[in-house]
Length: 191
Ligand SMILES: Cc1cc2nc3c(=O)[nH]c(=O)nc-3n(C[C@H](O)[C@H](O)[C@H](O)COP(=O)(O)O)c2cc1C
Image 1 (tube, rainbow, N blue to C red):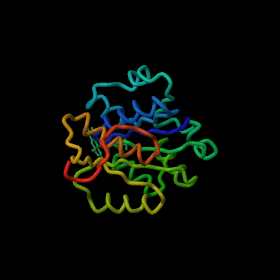
Image 2: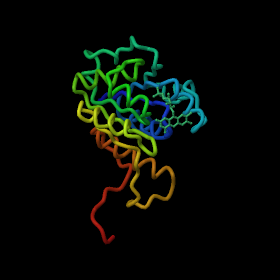
Image 3: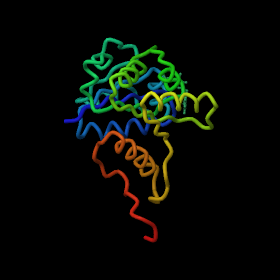
């Protein structure tokens, strides 16, 4: 069974993290790290608390951002994982990772993923971008991460918010190498 670390930060788009957790937890081992701001936005946007999330996904290991002694903070553990995804990823977390600053468990997991060459996907969300945001995206890309912005396509003609979300989550799962059928793949024009 594949293993992933799923980090949820305080950017808008908790629903992307939640949906990714739903799908991954059905077929993989998952560790979730929720930042303090991630807790706030989760409650604001989905009306869920971290405790409720834990009850909903009993097979998943949950960590708070302060738990720097978690196994996944160590290279010898994380190297056995198939990927780390930060979804949604705030500009603050992006900046910390881009500059090697480790103030919490999410930053540390990302840094360890980069140094151990474990796949790292950062699903950034902000609009518009400042020059600093763009520079930080370049820095993490050059360090080996994949910046996969929460930027849905519409060529599959979504009929609901859920289908828009599934498009983004499907693209992220593609990057993680996790099989899914969340969106219909483009088979050429003239349908
Ligand atoms: C409702 C709400 C929505 C937010 N949306 C964003 C966002 O889309 N992108 C972003 O970079 N920060 C956003 N923020 C600000 C972050 O939560 C804030 O920068 C926080 O310090 C990020 O911390 P973290 O990266 O440790 O989770 C939002 C905050 C709130 C309360």
